[in-house]
Image (cartoon, rainbow, N blue to C red; front, side, top):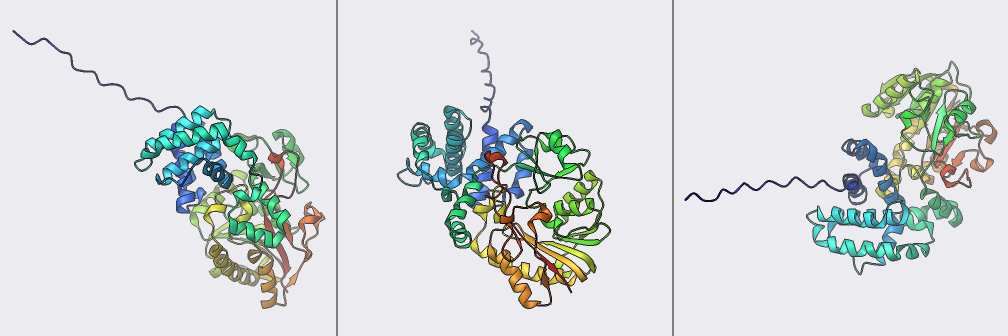
Length: 446
């Protein structure tokens, strides 16, 4: 007798991952890159977001930025519920930080934050053995973490000790604490406009600052905002927009923008009527500058060259936005706090001195030289100018007046240089407060 027929077992359909897991996996990878490998976030972000659904890209950015902005606080809270550091590797570390960040700072249900972080651990070879620990710790954070958070009142907790010590020495303890507090908050969206700043502030629902920048609190896809496709404006921090204005009336003048990419200052100078030569050594960054020129319908000569060997000019004016530690941009780039080291500042200071000497040599007699950096460190700002004037005593500082750029007088140093801090430009709404930390000095070349 023939055996009874048995139908083949049907394969089970694959189980779809829970919503939001893919975004958190990408966020974890980016956090690992910054905290465990010292990888700048910008280098990895574009490629990482390409693998994420468009609807989840803002979530990835917010997750990563929150962990980096509140890194010290998150570790302090987690340490309350860990008897010792677990050995589950970078993925477990990122999963715990992400879970705690969502519970304490983001509008995510506690159960979802815990579950998704546990799943991140379960999917990693080294971390899977600690998934139960992750579950227990994050449940503790959900239950008791907010009380622990209320006890952690020092804003310096979210700044590396070596940086905080520097800022206390340079600016004093009170100002250093205010800088650290400013870094905890997401920066506003600042726009430089070709013209009609008041009109664009009204159209976009923003505010026209005294410096001429249009500031928006609302976030969203920048290319979708009115005026973007028409090239009416470009994104540029309010402080970053000040150095180009220190050159004064540049209409018809030959101006070099050195270390120019991604090009905000080039666009400013071109919009003011200057005949601009934009120089940068990185072709990939210059491509972004060219795209911005094309979108805004502005003209500039773009040169890929090392400024130290660039032999153009001479120019009526030169703007040198020198490579620096970028510690003044931590509000917008919170990874900087965790990827820079003290030795980076010393190496960059040597390069800045060489670039300053070359920039001065490119200026016509009687022309202006503006030097700036987006750094809070004295070696990259006032000390550079002091050293240059010792080497080149024939150069003369042309003091900056607050009124000429709409600046607060507190932003002008006793020497007549510009020094903005992240805690400047205060507003009752933290989303509308602050600006990047910038230093700028203006010189006359005989």
